[in-house]
Amino acid sequence: MGWFGSSNDNGAAQPAQSPQAVHVVAPTTEPTLVAPSTVTTPDLSPVTDVSTGSLASASGAASGAPAAASSGNFLTSMLGENSGFLENPLFTGGMGLMVLGAVVALGRTGIVQGSQFLQRQLLVDLEIASKDRSYAWFLEWMSHHPQRSSRHLAVQTTVKQHASGSFTTQFSLVPGPGRHLIRYKGAFMLVKRERSNRLLDMNSGSPFETITLTTLYRDRYVFQELLAEAQQRAQKMQAGKTVIYTSFGPEWRPFGQPRRKRELDSVILDKGVSEEIVSDVNDFLKNSQWYHDRGIPYRRGYLLYGPPGSGKSSFIQALAGELDYNICILNLAEATLTDDRLNHLMNHVPERTFLLLEDIDSAFNERKQSADQGYHSGVTFSGLLNALDGVASAEERIIFMTTNHPERLDPALIRPGRVDFKECIDNATEYQAEKMFMRFFPGEEKLCNEFIQTLKANNKLVSTAQMQGLFVMNKTDPVGAIHMAQYLPENEGTPSPASEPPAHKGV
Image (cartoon, rainbow, N blue to C red; front, side):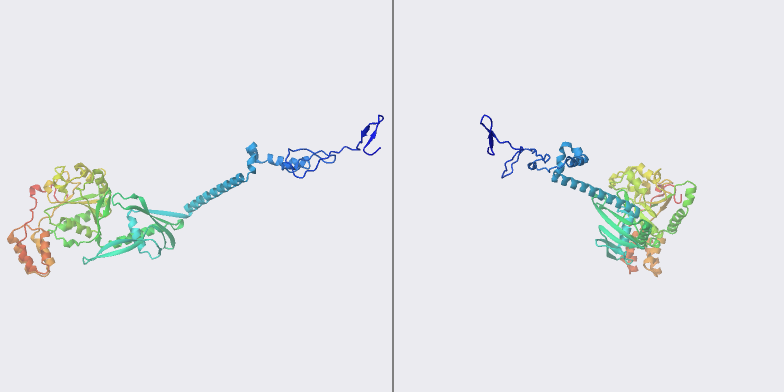
């Protein structure tokens, strides 16, 4: 029979038998996406269809390696079924940026804290507030310091009074807000001046300022030396002058420019009066230990009384210049003055300073405020007494009070302990008239006698202020002064003995 078939006994054709069964897959021209299928051949192990996009595994061992790696992955184990996010490039990129940002933030914090630690260990700062007296001293010192590097400057205008009485305006270029570098005694120092935009001085309305000095810790000793030098410079500028302070809120501030010291002999009092007061003040200043050893409060009160124009305030100013003291003037008629503020001011008088209460009689009349004389204040009479010698009163203090009417003063105000020395500064006597005439017209003894006789003939009470005005109007004409003397108006009389304060001088 042929190749394709044979016949059996019945003569029917039988299909040809192949020696081996073979599965034949028809070839396709284009790939078709189908579900994974397994093709079995005698010589090949099961192979995954390439249409799934997975890599074929040649052996069971090779297919188990990725599973072992993923099981050890921490993020995969944490995410569980959502571990597919790890294959998202946006997710992995964001995670990388987050980790990088955290590392940078931690590094930055570490650098800042490390620099602050090094700064605390290697550097030292000194802050000077604008309310402190050394603030103005330092600015003045730095404006004249040669070894400074300043690019931000501010102008400070001052008026200087000369011995002749003329004035000169001076401009000082002081460091402005910002940073400045100076070198002092071999040490470099950073100066930072800051001005607050929110904090204001309630009294002056000026912005609150601070100056911060920074240098190496090993050079911290220069702070004390620098401030001492600045203070000496400020004191040198005030040499030969008297500083007048007035109350400004809760503190004392210089009023205007320092005054040129007045000579003590330029204020002519009656014979022996000036010497007696000066001697008592000097004795008080020399015996501070004596007061402390005996438990006596170290303070002294003086009352100068007499008619207006007799030289009470002028003598106090001249005495301050003689002893190199300054003066604090306290106005009891100030509307904002209260008992607490009065006590605070009297307890914070600057060192080497007289406290002056002028016209003390105008403040209280029979322990009541003199509203009819324009007196409106929160100070009570008991508050004034307690401030003078109460439990909270200050020590190492010299108080001067003046009055034109001692008869109006309450005895409690001028008792010993509050007022220890009383002196009457009266109208001009013959002794004072002679001394003043010879001071203005030296060498004119004959005309001086004529001047005295003219005053006696008129029989008028004349104050030293009236005579001084007369001599000023006739600077080079003593005859004219004698002629005008007879037209001087009479001054107020001195208090009668009955109205004099009790416990006279030297208590």
